[in-house]
Length: 407
Image (cartoon, rainbow, N blue to C red; front, top):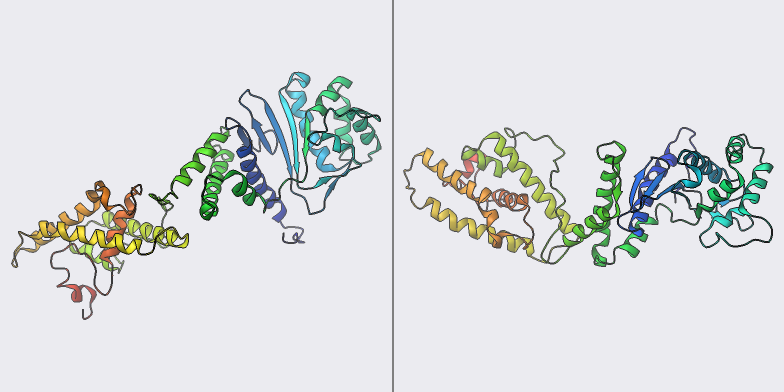
């Protein structure tokens, strides 16, 4: 991990903490029953709500490598301060709260905090109870930060102190932020082929980040459930099956502003030749962009078989040629320009709205996203030095004029 920034105004560590918070929430939601939901930044860093309404408040600490928790570690007592307030608010011993501390550090072997590690609660001690050890630790502290926490703890009676402490678990040695993706892929994505786990994880984390943002901005204020995560994971995995391909450019926009009047590309010039409106040309530019970028993404992820795109384009060009002959067969050499443009528009509309109903024209059986097919026709119409398909019956004859150069 990179060294911590030394600039006193740097927000790097705080930013890292927020990312860690979201990643660790995803990891633990995958480990819990799927009816569990999670809230970020509500009563604590994370609130996990189980199927029975029980609430587990989790504080997260992403610490430097080698960091240790001792009796008076502020990481622990600052969390206790939060938990005490929630405990008193929710009825003390009658509350349904549990308290978790997830830390990348380790609890010192000689610290009474080791009593809060999993498997250690309820273990008898010949020396003292957790309550006595906590009171003793607080009595030794001279910290101004810990003093009010000690006072708040002292407001509980002995039974409440014991009850409160019994609800605490410390999970030390928690995975670091850079280790979480590997943990998720290795332990929770075995249903996904190993070759595709990285891509599926990126899709899952992208969806998860969006879900977290919506919760924090109150666009979706309810909790995020484990079953939502598993449903998304299964859906993404399905896109990487032999009869399918992932669709990742739906609603994506090109970086440059779309200018339908000045766009110099051949497929756009073709649409102008048959009188397609500016708004429809804009849709065509989007379909071209999304199909082109989607193909590039598939190629980068090695999802396409050798020659698969070429075979697909041959299939589309052959089907276009067959329908073109039907549409153009009644035209004559001296047909009016209006008739020529109308025939071209008919052919274009068929490619845009009818071909999607033909299952055999899909690149793979379950790839039904319209921009893949529509954009592929535009890619064929943009081929150089001569387009593989055209819409206007005499476009090829006019090619040199359209391009302004010798054909």
